[in-house]
Length: 428
Ligand code: ACO
Image 1: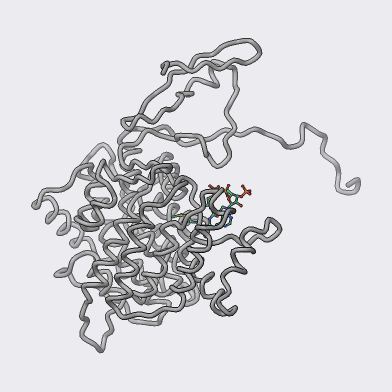
Image 2 (image 1 turned 120 degrees about the horizontal axis):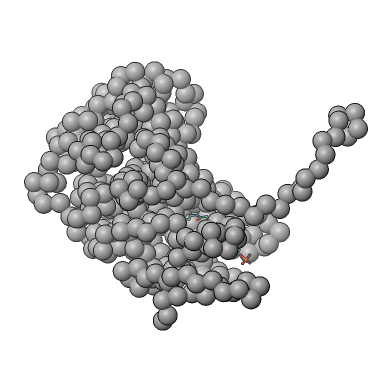
């Protein structure tokens, strides 16, 4: 293939370099487009055809269903690694040695106490507040308690900020849940692993000895690994773009949490369970909902189906489907909602509408089922996603700052009114 792309406008030719990624992905480098053409831009709503950055963190091939963090396949990582090790890998680029891993965990633990005044902010929220809103606000509030901005030219400063948020975030996530339940706040136990400690902070009761269930710990750890990064998705792009203005790490993460909240992104796992429950309440006739999803006059979409980039299958969904069945078997749970999910997936996978549009169950179709089996309440599902995605957001933010990327600032094609004269109120 030639290494130059030629664009012809009104008989005038412009040349742009063709650049290749390490996995042979090809992009036309249009950095000079506006300057050489006198202001012409590309129009690409939703950035479906735009690579916003060069990144070394995660590779995914939507057609082949490949997902790799720093070169390691998601299947191997889910099978052989643990969440904290994957976090280190994503953020710093290499698997840690035993010493690095232990130090990383210790450093995270040292920062895991949140300023007691944060509780006052938490208390200001009604119990009914959605935990994602609370989490986003508390993460942003951490900036006020840690006002010194991160010196990104110092690896040490960067490391300190990273372990700080990895330590405090699970506390904030668990507290949002406990606040909603009216439970006293829990501080965790540094003798436990990262995921096990999070579960304790969520579920320990003051009048009972907390005993963790290894099946639950392992299943949650796997889920967190599967959610840990997904290259330039909506929330990650948000973190990068907010961080590109040199806003701090915590503020950038808080924006990422808000982006993740929406039902077309991380909020889908909650939407899936709500949809399955609604189908159950409605008598369990999932065929009716398949028809609704296909009806263009009906806004209903089959939640947990379809993906912007995976057009054959979502590799995470494959792993999670097996894990969901294992967890339900191990815990002896017989959930009618799971039967509806299975039936729905089977019908949709054989239906021409879904087949022709390459709509397959995505990671969220099954993750909600596991969260439910683990005893995690539905409004907390997206918080679990945020906890998993945290290392990915951090890794992408760090990369963006280390690469000294320019501030993110897309252009637009203006299609509004042309210049007109102001009309006084009495004449309107
Ligand atoms: N149910 C019914 N039809 C669907 C669905 C669905 N879940 N998803 C897409 N379609 C249809 C669209 O109506 C469209 O049909 P058309 O070509 O006849 O107009 C076609 O499939 C393409 O859909 P787009 O919206 O253009 O696909 P896009 O790539 O922009 O959207 C998205 C991807 C947002 C994930 C979409 O599939 C969706 O809304 N899914 C449901 C929500 C969901 O599960 N989100 C989680 C995503 S995974 C994650 O964030 C971790």
